[in-house]
Length: 468
Image 1: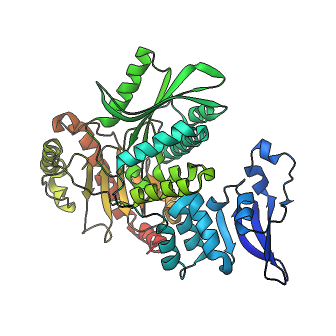
Image 2 (image 1 turned 135 degrees about the vertical axis):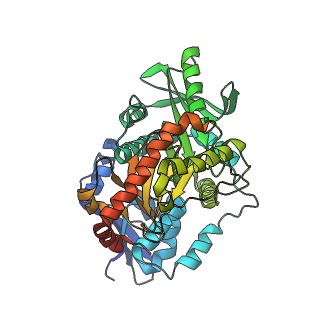
Image 3 (image 1 turned 180 degrees about the vertical axis):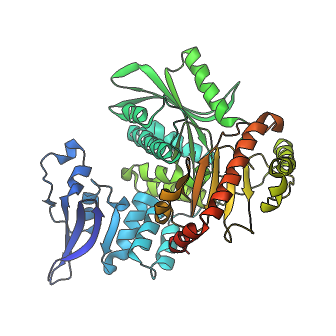
């Protein structure tokens, strides 16, 4: 029989394909073929003996053929085609390597709608938990990975560098200019030696979920510390990010380490709310950094992380008198600031609230489209004119009419036109933050006026940018 393409994934300038052939006795043999740019995804060591266009030896099992592909991050690349007869097997292997996030990407890209209900159910049934995943479970999972797999640390550092690089491009600011993505990438180069992985370290600055202490083989006397805070749904404590930095500075002064980074590990949508840490790694990225060699253990860890990611970020929220008072003072100040324009904005009445309630949402039914709103993300220092369920890439042509300082961003399922304002580092005293609030409210007014002035052009692009 004629060879058949089992799957094909693409990268810029090339592709990776897996072929199969069924003989007269219904036995299959498989082989892989790579072309052009896929060769350059390999390390120099793995490139040895290969050429940019390569065909592998033939094997008799699909799982063995997919292991040949594991030299590449094939499960994370753009899926081009997948043989329907092998849907279940291939997608199960995608799940084993990248978790639910990767599987969902394959299903959506290839339009395999009739597979979703059955296959997703089968995949999620591989491990059943009789407990709710908590931050403590993630702490122990990360502690084990850092302690047992040096390559996990390298991948963790590279993910942090990538996210820091992306954040710098989005905001146009480098909050910690001495701690650049390039600095993290330089740290990750070469052999890394773990010295200690401490959990739940308590000192005068509070509690650190994890402290990872390590050195580079070429600089064994320079100890580097990662001070890691893990979040799933719990709100930040007062000045938590700053207290992590204070802990790092104290370690420098005491000679415990010569360099430190404060890093937040959390679901991607949690990180989007703002944090104040020097770098971040998403839980979704953690699933892709787990060692492929662990098999069933890796699958279990992926399920733990997947459950953590999909857990609603609600939980029991304890009323915080400090934030409650701040929002009351903020609400009162609106009349003074907006004066005759107060009626243009609708913001919820102050009620007892929790410590992390630092998003101030302004609606304007008279002037903004239905469901659109302006969000002051106080801790992050962003004021976003937000359009739900839109694709920011399709709004990029609006850049030609944006005013100075305005930028376009994808924020979860929404897109936003953003202005950067001073962040609010503490909510314990409204009077101390009044000037910063005034700057933010001026940005709110500016974004509303911008939309009103450019309504026709913006609305025309919003129609094509809608995702639902």
